[in-house]
Length: 129
Ligand code: C2G
Image (cartoon, rainbow, N blue to C red; front, side, top):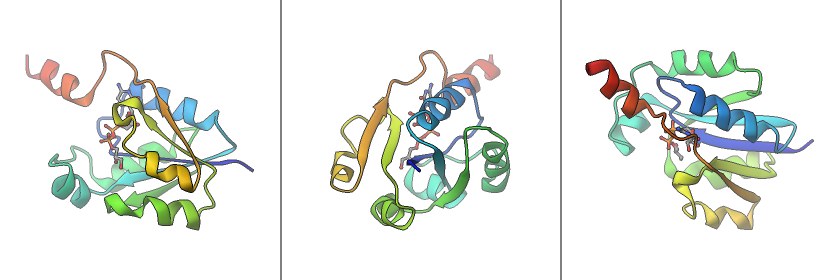
């Protein structure tokens, strides 16, 4: 069984996220999403989650491509996650291209093209109009 992991905030879930998860699942048989906690978002990404971690987790667990959701609490947990969950492939959008190449020592690393013209920032901007 090929096991895949990806990381993200997935707040204001949109089709760009679904498109990423759909392609990520195609890389294996079991997809884990490490979901940024509210504290991690605030402390490390300087962004306040609109939906709480639990609500974002519920949404992700309802997606057919997602097999398991775990918390992302620290930038440095990826190597441990890869070992603990016996991950074959780490995947993330290419806005992170190159940033996680150090994981190649532990598993395959795949950067997928982002879905153009959709982002949470853009949604929030449009809603303010
Ligand atoms: N994404 C995408 N297309 C978009 C928007 C997002 O493919 N239009 C992808 C991102 O590249 C990422 C995933 O969807 O792989 C989740 O996006 P975010 O929630 O914005 O993730 P981010 O805040 O970049 O967190 O440790 C890694 C970080 O937690 C990644």
